[in-house]
Length: 127
Length: 286
Image (cartoon, rainbow over all chains, first blue to last red):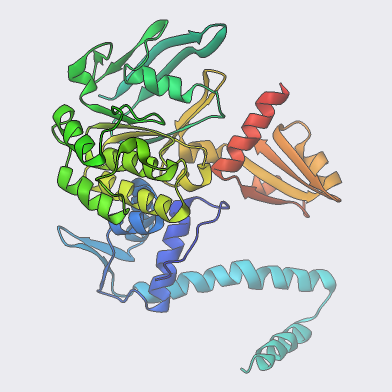
């Protein structure tokens, strides 16, 4: 978990906190079936109102990525990482692939050229 | 039950410091009281704590009038810029005296905080530097355990490290034992994420009173090439405009509609400080 992490003004804090928690699960910093810090610990570490921290954490609880054990704390659900990878893959398509394809059509770049470009990008980055 | 402020008016000579102020402070929330110098923040807090009498109107705490009501006033603790302790009193003694007036004051915790902030409790209060006078006051506030806590510029003169410590301790305290906090500050950026309700005061009038999130959803900035921005903002409620070269950024009051955004323009949300500054500029240009 990155303790130097800063919030920006662009989006609500609870959404930024939720994304930070997702990143921590994706990176393996928070492992499945392991306990994560409490709402109080998040609030103090990030100097945010506990209600805001709760709202952020609840996004992951509602998505089934975290679950609460009464009187113990919050845990990462099994299968959370896989769920997130799937979600981020879909996000990747919407944010990067789709606009790239639309721009390619706009510029008249054909299918074979497009595939060639992707392969070039991959090989330039050692894949 | 909270604090109810009803039709509060107060003048000093020809200056109207509070102009028919009405507020409901709900329990167990952190309120940010924001306003420029001379807006009426301290006057309002002083009347809530019976340090000043209003010309008209009243304040109720948990349903009871505060006017000379010691029983109710024992539930409220205020730290302000002025120390109300007698000349020559030492920090240690001040802790003991505070305990007499506020039985839930935790002397042990106050001493622990003094150690962490490196405040020498043998020192005379009047001999403390500006920063340490602030530290002394925030230690009182963090140790007093009253259901209502009023903090008037609590971080004045504190360095970044001590401010950081204070914000964390305040959240810790609030998490363990939620109380109602009203917090006035000029360092809006730092307090923005702590508060959940915003009160903005200007010339003795409350001009905004709403949850922080709702307030920030009610404004956004749009930026891009000047001509495009001008075109986009015509007919919208513009709070402020900044231009640099051919680029322009405008703060808009209202909700952003991503769908009808022309290409070349970018929308982002506004931070509390940006919102506050834009609002003050707009009010001044009226």
